[in-house]
Each structure stands twice: as C-alpha cells, then as structure tokens.
Length: 129
Image 1 (cartoon, one colour):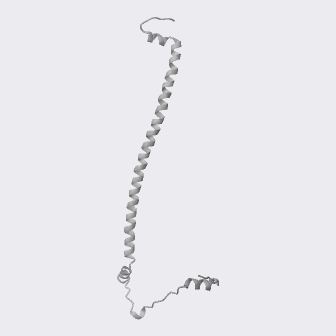
Image 2 (spheres, rainbow, N blue to C red):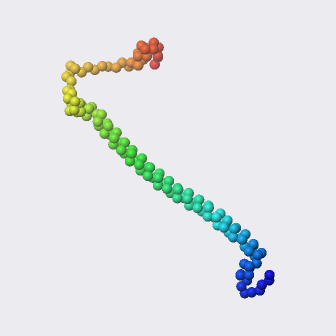
Image 3 (cartoon, rainbow, N blue to C red):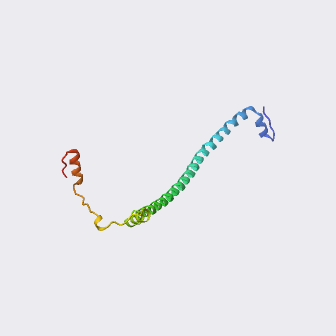
C-alpha cells in the first residue's frame, strides 16, 4: 500500500503496520506519567500529614499547659481547704464543735524506734538500725 497524498497522517492510520507501532508508545507514556504521579502524590500526602500532626501536637501542648494550670489551681484550693484554720472554721460552723479547754489537750510524744518495737512485738525479730 503505497499512497502518496498530502494527507499522510490519514494514510498512516489505515496502514496496519503503523497502527501496531503507535500503541506501544502510548503505553510507555501512560506508565511514565503514572511513575511520576505516584511519588509526587505520596510526597504531597506525607507533607499534609506532617502539617496535620504538627497542628495536633500544638493543640495537645496547649491542652497540657491548661491542665497543668488547672491542676495548680486545684492544689492551691486543696492546700487552703486543708489548713488548720479552715478545718477549724468548718468544724465549728457546720458541725458545732467547740475549742477544747487547756486541760482537755494531751500531747503524746512519739518514740523514735516505734516501728522497730512493733516489729519486735509481732514478729519477735531483732532488727538493728
């Protein structure tokens, strides 16, 4: 089939040999585009994930700081509530307790080796410090 015409492009499509030759080139082009697209897609996806993780880390840091501040406030309230003056105020105000008289208060001194004496009584073992 030897055609000589100005429209050689049209003639190439009609020739079976030229049609077979062109299909291999298209497959290579598609494979090349896919080989370039996949790494770019993976890089972009990883970059976006990194940004999202940074936002999450910053959010958690802010939450941690807020919780630490709340914890300090609660600890200060607890210390204020556990002070002797506050306990006495609650005992007198809510429960009607009265301050003890001087002769009603007894101070008991604790011995230095108290735990060692208990060990000796219950276990009979002599422990040396």
